[in-house]
Length: 380
Image 1 (spheres, rainbow, N blue to C red):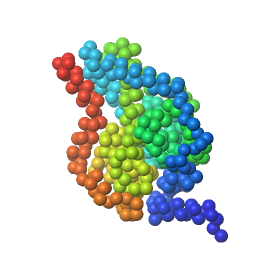
Image 2 (cartoon, rainbow, N blue to C red):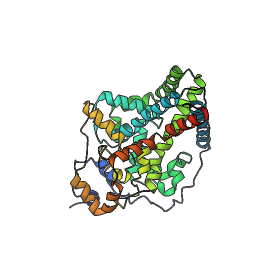
Image 3 (cartoon, helix red, strand yellow):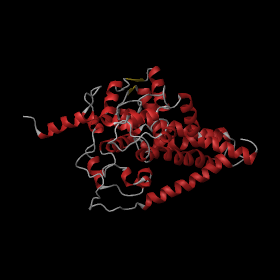
Image 4 (cartoon, rainbow, N blue to C red):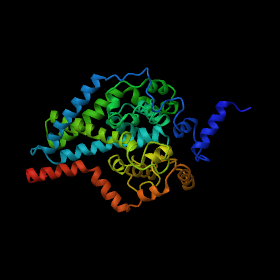
């Protein structure tokens, strides 16, 4: 006799897709499943009372004040060379790719496999982003997928834009986040010696990669005093890149198209696609979290630099076993839960236009800064 638990699991598998390909591990089925019925999506928990963590509020405030000063140092001070801003921007994108291709698509979703040199590089890039170590990042992200937009979601978008964007860092976590977080399977993440190394030496690695390397690179190439280099290449760069990352949790869960699964809150948001270098195909990503591209079409038909990076690594032999659902599987999902007309409207964009607009939006801060320098200083 089939037990109730097994029957429930079979029912859940049928809800995901008629046939899963490639075969998914049990924890991956959980990431693809609907909202867990044991978690209340909207009803407030009477045991939970919002508690502001003032230490974090003060830290965030100081970070943004420092970022404003850092922007002035590297961008608006006429005595500073224009390429100081370019260097800071480079480190921002370098660090972001460690999150996009590393902790997200590689370690959280196992969407592809990476050889040791690439895993080390991605670990270095991720460390520079200062978004917790890989192990903790994967725990929170898998929890986010399994209980998306419920009280167990660390950045539950149902609690509003500000909360899902950055407010979740300023209050104590909901008890459901702690309770469900302890159930997340992470043995596959911990099995990687690169992850264990980073977690063991995280503080010194952060001091070196997040702080020292960007600071001294700008100092060496521009001659700007170290104090100013730190605020420009580290504090401003860090705050700016955080907001781009946070938009995936906020805007991409509240605004846009639900073309693959209308029962899922995440949406396809073109602005977030551009700012996050390809992470804004979010309705698709929550429908098929194990797709290495985090989008249906990859980079050849739509703006997705993160996928381009992974494909380049695959050409070099550093990445392999790139996982991708079949077109048949995707179309069946759309027929059952999606919106084909919305999809056609969304992707009715010329690829050249998509990339031109994408890079303009992505590099908007650089373009804006150089325009300001030209207007007020008469030169870049």
